[in-house]
Length: 114
Length: 115
Image 1 (cartoon, rainbow over the protein chains, first blue to last red):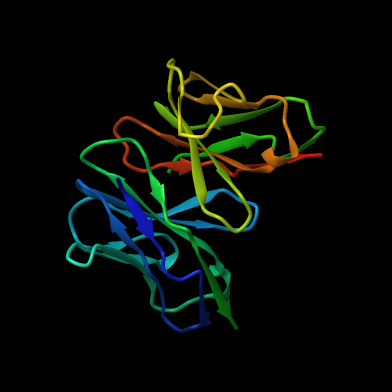
Image 2: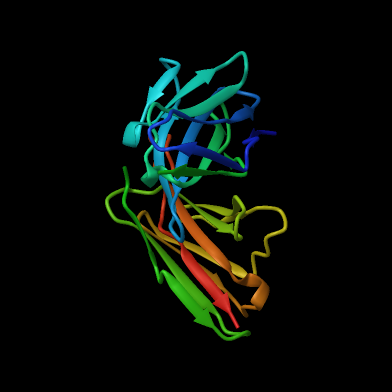
């Protein structure tokens, strides 16, 4: 079975400060890892993914994430937060070796204050 | 990435009626489509997975006779909520994926309110 944990329900950060949204995962095979962002009453927008290659992945809107195999983590980061980054962020994993299913974490609400 | 649309974006219906939600992949051949539901302040729960031309595979606890899914083509899937009840009120989101594509792309969601 595969699972994703986002240990923080909410992250508060001041505009201009760096932000980190944490994610850890568990999967039997090769992890395919994704970050999505959801704005109120909207679907999910794809931010970035790790399939293979460099552990540091760069995505949309200045976000990046680092795949750490030993810690089974895929934390989302941004050097300088914007108020417009305030939204709900979901980490997800799929077993690249087998299976269709994308499993989501519980989501982390990011609040960026001016 | 793929552009995915859903129609309607918001629907209010009376208890006992059926509601059809369409999901279209506008620029992408979606060999696999997924339907999720999301309750307020919660994560997405997968309801079913469908491959074009095949019957949908439902997750445990999801009634296939209540949530009818038709994946008629590579660009269209429909979810019909039959005999809707207030507890079916939720945010329904579709997602698409292609054969050679690792990433799932999501529609904007449909908010269903059953009175």
